[in-house]
Every structure is written in C-alpha cells, then in structure tokens.
Amino acid sequence: MPELPEVEITRRGLEPHLAGQRIRSVTIRNGRLRQPIPAELPALLAGQTVRGIARRGKYLLLECDNGWLIAHLGMSGSLRIVPAAAPPEKHDHFDLVLENGNCMRLRDPRRFGLILWTGADPLRHPLLAKLGVEPLTAAFDGDLLYRISRKRATPIKQFLMDGAVVVGVGNIYANESLFRAAIRPQSACGKLGKARYARLAATIKATLEDSLAAGGSSLRDFTDSAGKPGYFQQQYNVYGRTGQPCRLCGTPIATLRQGQRATFYCPHCQKP
DNA sequence: CGCCAGGCCTGCACGC
DNA sequence: TGCGTGCAGGCCTGGC
Image (tube, rainbow, N blue to C red; front, side, top):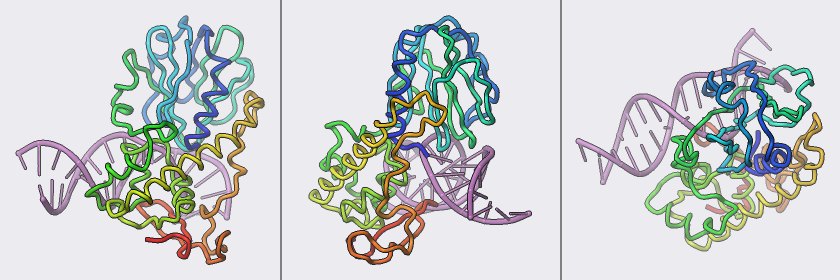
C-alpha cells in the first residue's frame, strides 16, 4: 500500500531513467484499472520525449512533449525500470517502452491504480484540482489544520485522511502520526486547539520524513525486480498492533473502525 | 470457501 | 436553494 513516501521514492528512482528519454512504444496488456487506460495512449505517446517527472499527492506526473501522463499506484501498484525484453509477469499491465531498450513497467495486482493522459495542466485535471496541501512543504503547519478544521465535526483521523485537506496521509500514517502526537483518533477535529495541531503537523512531517529516509536507502536497487522501498520494514507503534502492549506505557493497543477503515490507538497515551 | 484489507472516487442523504 | 459535509458503496486480488 504505497503511501506518499513510497510514491516520492518511486519518483526519485524513475527520474534518472526517464528524463530525456524518447518513447518508442506503449504496451497495454490489461487496461482495466480504476479507470480504463486510454486506448489512444500508444498512438499519442510514441515518439514523444519524457522531460521530467513530478508528483502531486500520490499522483506521479510524467511531463512529455505534448502533455502529461498521470499515474497513480492505488494500493498495490509499483512502477519500475526493466529491460523492455524482460518477459512480463502476472499483473504487469502497462509498459512505457523507451528507445534505450528499457521500459517503465506498471505492476498492479488489485488494479486500483490509474494511467491517464492530459494535454493540459495536470494540476487542473479534475482528479487533482481539489487536492489539499502537500505535507512536506512549509505551507503545511498547525495553523493551517486549525483553520480548516473549525466548525467541522469529523473525527481527526478522517480529517487527516481527507485528500482535500492534506494529501498523502493514508491509513498507516494517520494512525502513527496521531499516536506520536498523543491525540485520540475519535476526537472531533473542530475541537482541537492550536497547540495540539502544531504538534500534529510536526509529527506528520516527521513520520513521513522518517519513512522517506528509510526508503531512500533502497533507491540504488530501484531497477531490481525486488525494488521495494525500505519503509515496509519500519516498526509501527500502533498500526496492526491490536491487543499488543503500547511501546510507551504497555497498555494494550485498541482498535475500532472509522469510515470503514481500521483505526489503532493507545487508550492511555492518546488523549481526547 | 468466504471474508477482509486498502486508496480514493462517486453518489446519496442530510442540515444549515 | 445550494453548498458543504459525512457516510456508504464499489472497484480488485492475495492472504488468511
């Protein structure tokens, strides 16, 4: 389940292999992702050069001569650079074949990912236009969260996972950040004060940056078939630890469901 | 075998 | 009214 650090690590890993490379062809083996891969993509992309690769939230944006390829990894997607001649495995749905003999290959068993095309500004694309602030920028701070949350009754965890508020905070990071900030996930977001939001914004940044640092170490192996960012090896404080002792106080980690998503927290360390 | 996880979009219901 | 908000459903497959 790629979260923002993994998407950023993917971006950094892809960039040196894609920037400046000319596209020879496109192969669509199974275009039935969350939305269909545009059937005209092969004709559109052949001969274009990839200029660079950017990221907005968990969307990857490949800038080409005449537009942008928008990619999203969903929850089981991965993009890697492999020799174009390498035989595709199960769930390898899409190849962007380069003239240098490599290709960027999408594997996505659950097909929650996306491959789209836009000839216009990708930030104006309907899927991206209403995204919230990037959590690793200076614009993201406690004051911003405080302001947006006023008069809202949503539990803080669901507020954090709302992509229109802040992008890239998925279930794992929402749980872990709230633990680090000592805030109970059920607390109404509109009732939390500025000080607690300041701490929360800081813990979100720290949690994401720790993962980026951990995953970055695997970057040099990016083109390997394994190529898994290292953050999977990270030790969680609460996520998936129902009933196990809190690492700070020993209280069993509690669990509940919020918006059809699993929530984990320490009833002692995390205050309403 | 059946159930569940998960990101995130869409559609619906509700209240000011 | 219309909008913002909050909730539920749906897409899929691997793993238990």
